Image (cartoon, rainbow over all chains, first blue to last red; front, side):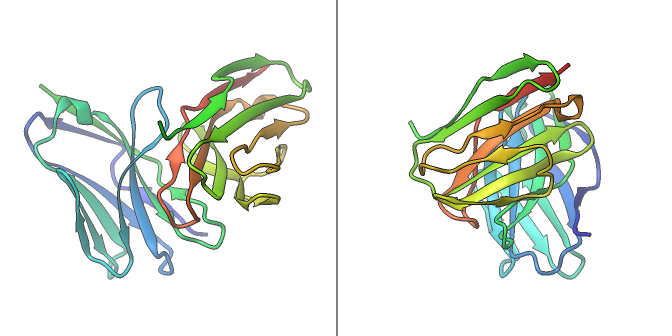
Length: 112
Length: 112
């Protein structure tokens, strides 16, 4: 079946360093990928998305890279801050149901 | 303020006692969806609705019902809750099935 998964369940970085969170997917027909951030006690919050006809997309301090050849996407956070500490989910969207297929999540911890 | 609201935020109930979790959005979104979040399993879609009076099953629909009589509301109904429905539930909405989904704050349900 289809799956979206993350490589590492936890990631610890020093404040000010760059963070890279990785995700792999299995469905080649996926046309839309999204990264969500979930802080403790809150619902997932949209960070950035990327369509399958793109390789890279940049936002404020975040960049998403999509490598369709190896079915891999990554989220890069520049100059990581304590407020970036959260669980990050990649998700595949755009299917006929409109549902998001979520990965298991990576917990990012930022050390001061 | 654009938002998705859910009520109640916390609920403890007993097996077999019917309950409803309400969800409302004020963004005039056509697409609404319910997810459950469980440790180690991530977020999984329960039901979704493309528009008023149009609902369909997601990946884990057993034991749940929904209705979409109005555009803004999408209640989740558990006719006869069981302990395996203890979970954290999120409602989400978006302009359409490929647009950014906005999540509510979550409802933590415990079924004894």
